[in-house]
Amino acid sequence: MESRKLQLSVGICAVLVGFSLAFAQDKEPASRPTPTPASPLTLQVPHLEVTPTELDYGQVWHGENPIREVVLKNTGTAPLEIIKITARCGCVQANKPKSLLAPGEFDILKIQYKSKNRVGQIRRGVTIQTTDPKQPLAKLTLTGEVKEIVEGEPGNSIAFGYVTTDERVAKSVDLTVVYDEKLYLKLKGPDDKAAPSARDAYELKLEEIEPGLKYRLTATTRPPLKPGVPTIDAILETDIERVPEVAVGVRAIVKPRVSLSTSRYYVSPRLNRATQRIVRLYYLTAQPVEITKIESDYAGIAGELRPALVKPQTGESSAQTDEKTSPASRPALSTPTAGRFSFHEITVQLPPGKDIPKGGAKLFVYTDDPDPRYSKLVVVITNEQSQRYSPRPVRRRPSATDRAAEPAQEPASAEPPADVEKPDKPDQEPQQRKPDKPTDP
Image 1 (cartoon, one colour):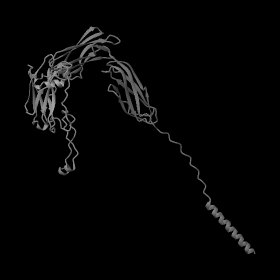
Image 2 (cartoon, one colour):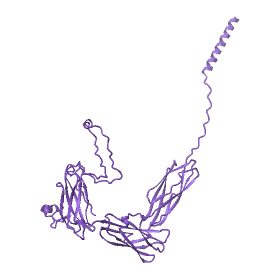
Image 3 (cartoon, rainbow, N blue to C red):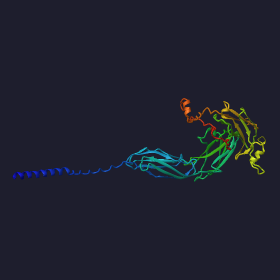
C-alpha cells in the first residue's frame, strides 16, 4: 500500500516537472529596451546676402562712367564660393571680388556703367552665381537715365551719306551745351581707336559761336578717299572732370564715281546647267555714264544691257510693252536710286561651271566716261575657290555598291580655316537658282 502511494507521488512529481519545463520553453523572451535616437546634426550651409539689390545711378551725363558699390556677405555657416558674375550688356563692368567668403566675411563689388553711345533710360541687370543652395543666382537691377551734355542740330553726329572717292565735301553740326553750367570745349582730334585710313579721311574744325554755350563742328572729306565706310569720333575736350571728353560721330559711305556691283562671280564646277546673274553699273547721277560695249574673252559668257523700266503711258502693262519692243531697240536701263547714284543693269549669261576655262574668264564693260579708271570695268568669272580658302567637301552617305567598289578613305575636314575669308556662296544644283537681286547703294 505504501509502495503504491510512493509510486503515485513520484508520478505526480514527474508530471509537474514536465509541465514546468514545457511552459518555460513556450514563454517568450523579455523585449529589449528601445535605444534612444541620436540628436540630428546641424547642416553647415553658406548663404549670400546682397546689399543693395537695386542700383540707382540717377542722372548720368553722356560720357560719364559712374560706379556703384554692392556688399556681398556670407551669413551662412559654411564657406561661400562666388563662381561667376555676369552682366547682360557690355556697358556694365564689375570688378572681380573674392572667390571664397568664410562664414561672416564680406567683400565689396564695384559695378561701373559706361554711358558712351547710350542715351536714355538705364535698365540693365547683373547676375551673381554662388554656391548658396537656396539662392544660387542672385540678381541685381541697374536703373537711371543718361542725358546728352550737348545737343546737336540737325543731329548729334555728322553723316555725309554717299560721297565719291574724289569729292571734297564739308558738313557741320551746331552743338548747344545743356549742362548745368557753361562748358568750354576744345578740339582734340579723331579718336585713337579709329583706323588710320578713317582718321586721314576727314579734316575737323571747331568754332565757338557763343562762349561756353554754343559751338560748330565741321568735318571735310580729304580726297582721295578709300572706298568703304570711314567712321571716327571727333573728340572734344571739356573743362570739367566729371565728363572730360565729348564724342561726336563722323561717318560717310565712300564709293567710286563709277563702279560695278561685283568684281567677281564664282560658279561651282559641279553645276551642270547654264545660269544668269545680274550686274549693276553705278554712276553719279549728276555725271551720267552710258555703257558702250559688253564683251567677254570666253565664248560661253555673254552680257546684255537690260531695258529701261519705263512705266507705260497708255495703261498697258509693262509685260505688254516689253512684248512690243525688241531687246535691241529698248533703251538702256537708267534707274535713279534714292541717293546720289543711278545704275544700269546687265544680264550675264554663264555656262555650266565645268565649262569655265582654267584660270577663269572675264567680262568687260566699256563706258563713255573719259576717266581711264571708269572707261573699262572687269568682272572675273571663275569656278575655282580662292587660294586662301579650303572648299568644303560634299558628303553623302555611300551606298552598298560604293562601299564595295571603293577603298575606305580618311574623311577630309569639313570646316575651312578660321582665318580666311568666306567665298561667294556656290550655286546648288538640286535647286532652281534665281538671278541675284542686287542691292541699291
